Amino acid sequence: MAVSKTVTLPVTTLDRSYDVIVVGGGTAGVMAAIAAAESGKDVLIAERGYSLGGSMTAGQVTPFMNVRIGDARNSYLSARMQGFLEERGFTAPAWNGQPKTLFSPVTMSALLEEMCTAAGVELLYGAAFVNTVREDGRIRSILVQTLEGLTEIEARFVIDATGDAQVAFVSGCPFEAGDPEDHEYNQNMSLRFAICDIDLLKANSHLAELDGVEDPNNLHVYMAMEWKAAENPLTRLFRDAVAKGILEESDGVYFQAFSSAAFGDSTMYFNCPEAPHCRHTIDSFEVSQGVVDCRAAALRLHTFLKTYIRGFENSTISWFAQLPGVRESRRIVGEFYLTVDHYNNRSKFADGIAQSAYPIDVHGKSELVHPRGFAPGEFFEIPYGTLVPKGIDNLLVAGRSISSSFWAQSAIRIQLVCHALGEAAGIAAAMALDLSCAAKQVDGAAVRREMCARGGTFLPTE
Ligand SMILES: Cc1cc2nc3c(=O)[nH]c(=O)nc-3n(C[C@H](O)[C@H](O)[C@H](O)COP(=O)(O)OP(=O)(O)OC[C@H]3O[C@@H](n4cnc5c(N)ncnc54)[C@H](O)[C@@H]3O)c2cc1C
Image 1 (tube, protein in one colour):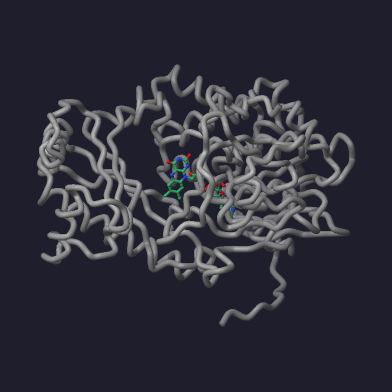
Image 2: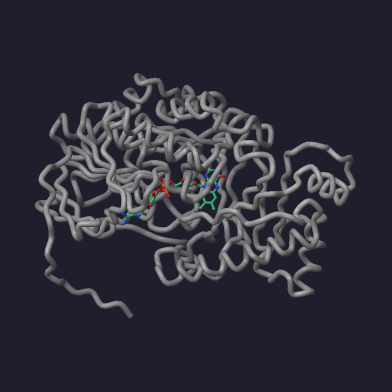
């Protein structure tokens, strides 16, 4: 059992301060920082790793999942980034009928640095956020562990884009984690990895043969298998490999892999394995064991592929994600709490700062609540109040940890939505500073108007 106590430690105070500090330079954090900088603010990103992009890069999570709102792109920065990705050839032509959604996580991190530098955002890498210094319901400064030791940096406004709501958590803001009706278990985490030197043509023709379909004869390979899903040819091979001790039962909880021209013509990316034994993603020991379990499972899966699928004979595991694939951990309970009812009712809000028709998508549950499927043209909105934590006036939360129920969060955690949430947080932070008001007093409808004025596009709501 952990015991909480207060200790006194030497701290160095940085000799300059910032209008806005974004903690976590990930999917939402980068957008938040650039948006605030483009509102004329001095902005710092404090990131514990040494690259930007978070789940998009260090987590190896590609592609941008389609939010199914046609051509609308709520985040002008996301649209800008997409343009740069395509210009520079960092995307693949098509995946699953969705054009240009697959990108290279490797080159993406360099592109994000270029975008931040161009906007004047300062980067502090190797800066692990530790705590906040608070006064009268406001954050005065943040404490980060850096090469120089424990460092205090003053900020007029803070955006928590850690994915785990770490700033909000240590600042005493209310939060939830996991499914309250199921032991507070979080969604399953994964650790993504890549395999290179695959003969994709050979693999594709073998998979086509297994499926009993004509050889599609192309480099686009897709494989998926889940014990709980309908039987497919891979299910039989997985079962055989489990019987022979090549795979473990848990390796078939979720298996998905695809090739992408964004990574060259011999690589496949694995959106797996999952760590079904890690039930609490805010427990550091459980997450650590989950990572260890996933690496071991990836080695088994590679042996399986080499043994069972032609084309993998000379392949090598080339890359494990540096960031664990946590789908859901802490979620703040903020000024607005998004639920499955809002999703089912396709709720729209005057201060809706993101739109989506992405479905409820919970990993690690055998049974789903019964969400209403989307008809063409239907979508729901996420209001600004979901970014506003309770109890601290100069803090906003962006990304997968916004104020939402366990089930609702599974529909809003995807990247294009996180881009819009981050961008809205950056614009709102600048507005709060300009108006000298608390985050909760910022007019979310004005934030949405500003997103549109800068080039974001929203579907009409009437
Ligand atoms: C396995 C998996 C597959 C997925 N598949 C898809 C998909 O195909 N398409 C899709 O659109 N979405 C997908 N998602 C969802 C999506 O990728 C994430 O929900 C989203 O990227 C999260 O964005 P974020 O900004 O909240 O967090 P992140 O992008 O994870 O960023 C958090 C950042 O904060 C930093 N940080 C954390 N703690 C600290 C600290 N103490 N100090 C300093 N920095 C800190 C981290 O290093 C990181 O850079 C997937 C998610 C997972 C896990």
